[in-house]
Image (cartoon, rainbow, N blue to C red; front, side, top):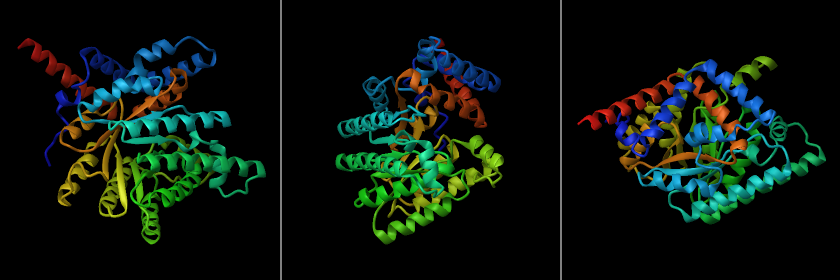
Length: 392
C-alpha cells in the first residue's frame, strides 16, 4: 500500500505560515500534560468568576479547533476546505445543558445545519449528541431500566419527538445524520432510540447513523446483533466507527461503583477491536454504510487496502473517512486528493459555550499516546520544507 500520509505540502496546503506557527504553538502546549491540567483549571475558574477571557480563547485555541461562533461564520472554512475535496460536518458543540428551552434551541440549530446540508454539497452530513436533546440523567435512568415517573415519561416523550423531527427532516432532505455516542451508562437508551429511527428512516439507504465506540468490549457483538435485526426487518444501518472518548471517566466510574470496566484493558486491544470492526462492516456493505472516524493511520490504510481488495471505488458513497478540524490534516487532505470521501467535524458555537468542548479536546489529546507528537513532527517537517523552498 502506497504510504500517502507523510506529504505535508498537501496536508497543510491551506495553512498560512502564521496559522502553521499557531498550530505548532498550540500542540507544544498540549504536549505538556501538567500545563494542560493547569490551563484547564484556570479556564474553568475564569469562567466561573466571569473573567474576560473569551477574546484570548477565540484568537488561539478556538480558531484552530472551531469553525466559528455560528453556522454562517463557518462557511468560509467550509468553502476553503472543499477546494481541496474535504467536506465539513457542522457540529454545534454546546455541551452540558439541562433545561427544556436549551434542548429546543439545540433542536432548531440542528435543523438549520440539515438545511445547510441540503443546499451545500460541501456539507454532506448533519450531527448531534443525544444529550443535546435531553438530560443525561434521564438517558441514564432509561438505560438502567428504572421505572420513570409520570413527569419523566412526558420528558422522555419530548426527547423522542425531537429525535424523530430531526431524523425525519434529514430523510426528507436526503442529508445523512450522525448521532454521537456518549458514556456507556446512558448509551443503551440512545442505542435503542436510534435503532428505532433507523427502522423508520433507513428503508432505502442509511440516513441515520449511530456511533459505535470500539474501546468498549461489547461493541462487536452489538454490531452483529443489529446486523441480524436489519436483515430480518429489511432496513439499512449507518455506523460511525470511533475508538472512544471517555476512557478515564469509564474506568473511574467502574472502580468507584465496583463493577468490571466495559473498556478494553489496553490501546492495543482497542486498536485490534477497531480494525476487526472495519473488516466486519466492509464485509457487510449490503446493510451497512460506514463513517470511519479515526486519526489512526494504520486503520486508514486498512480501509484503503480492503476497498482495493473488494474492488470498491474510493468515492463509494457508503464509505467516508472523518477527522476533527484542527487535527490530522495529513490524513484528511491526502485521502481527499486520492479521491476518497473525507469530512472534517467542524465544531461551532458561542465561544463561552464551546469552552467545555475545547477543554475536553485538550485533555483527550494529552491522553492519546503519540497523537500530539505526531502533529508536532509533521508541522516541523512542513516548516522546514517551506524554509528550504524560500532559500531556493
